[in-house]
Amino acid sequence: MVVFSDLDRSIIYSKKFIQEESNPLDIEIYKGENISYISRKTIENIKKIEKNSDFIPTTTRTIEQFKRIDFKKYGLDFKHVITSNGGNILIDGEIDIEYKYFIDEKLKLSSYISDIIKLFKEYKNINGIKKFRVAENLFFYIVVDEERFDLNNLNSFTEKIRDLNWDVYISGRKIYFLPREIKKSTALKYICDKYGYKNTFAIGDSTMDGDMLNFCNYSYILRHGDFVNYIKRGDKFIISDKKGFQGSEEILDKVILCQNNLKF
Image 1 (cartoon, rainbow, N blue to C red):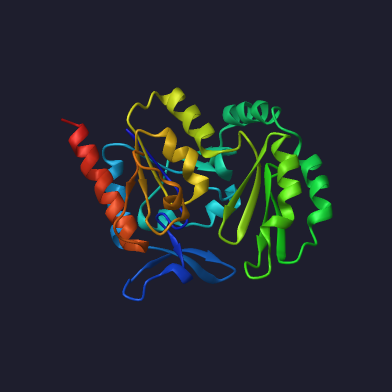
Image 2: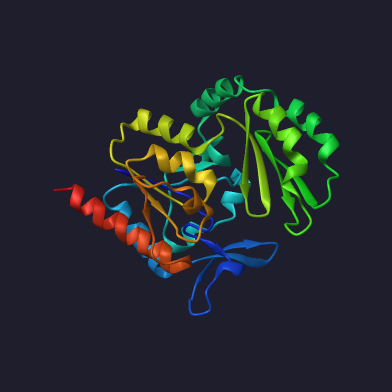
């Protein structure tokens, strides 16, 4: 069995998403400041899950951004990690070179990132765009001021790049532009094929987790995320009753219960 779990707003949270009644543990320090937190029960639950299955963090964060999270501080040391929205797999903290070759072949199906960035140049000064970032030369994203930014101003750009085999995802203040095969399910399928995983679990909250959630046999969604807005009647997903840390703990409890039932 294997559990693939998104990180931000799925099991760890930044300051602005912390409930007043919670007593979180700091887990990420950036520029001398605690910026991400995890609950004690979340840590305990992940350790319980790891007794019977592999737990694989699956994040859009780059390798550098992921390594800021100090899981080892609480006795968690993951054998495998998926970063860069499926663009990289880490094994014991090092890049999986075989997968790197694999993903490089997949990237040939889409236009080069340099060409897409050139197309974006005429849009970079649109009102409300605050930051432009390239992630490991795999994809790029912008950070916007939601009050000033109008997504319609990017319609012509998004239409162009979809024809070039690129996709667009909106995640709060960030808008991501990615080659079509740079997605979490690409890495999930690779790992499941390589290691023969049959019972697969996914935990996520956003539209960027959608392909991962659809890929797995058992999929759990945090109620506070935007992906709940896209669920249709008859979908297999299990949604948390609670939000925030309590929602994460609830979801992990459900995963543990399901795994225990599968053992019989």
